[in-house]
Image (cartoon, rainbow, N blue to C red; front, side, top):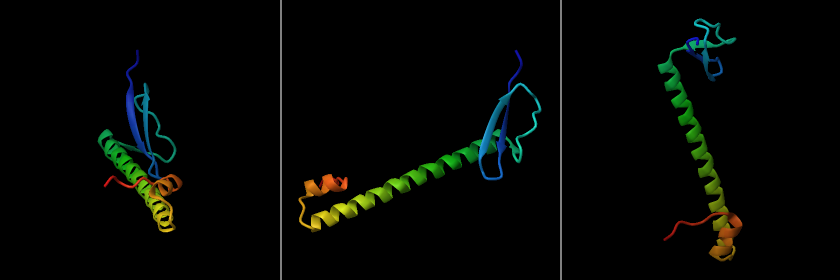
Amino acid sequence: MAELHTFYYEFPDGRLGKVETTDPAPAPPDGATVIDEATYNVKLAQWQAAQDQQQADTVAAETAKKKDAYDALVAAGFTPAVASTLSGYTPPAA
């Protein structure tokens, strides 16, 4: 059985790639730069952190929008329970 070699790449647009092959010296994909495993792991962790932050920002924005709708409904005279149902916002327990 042939030995597997792992190669790591970074593309000009910031995407990362990882290839396992039996070829000890494959040509990199078009436009890709060969990087070492440590660099790949750091860049992958940075990408994951950015994705996590983007998701957290999206959740926070959606929650703020729901809270604004809830507050407007309560101000318009709806009960908190109805405002919560209509807005999708659940106020924190007191």
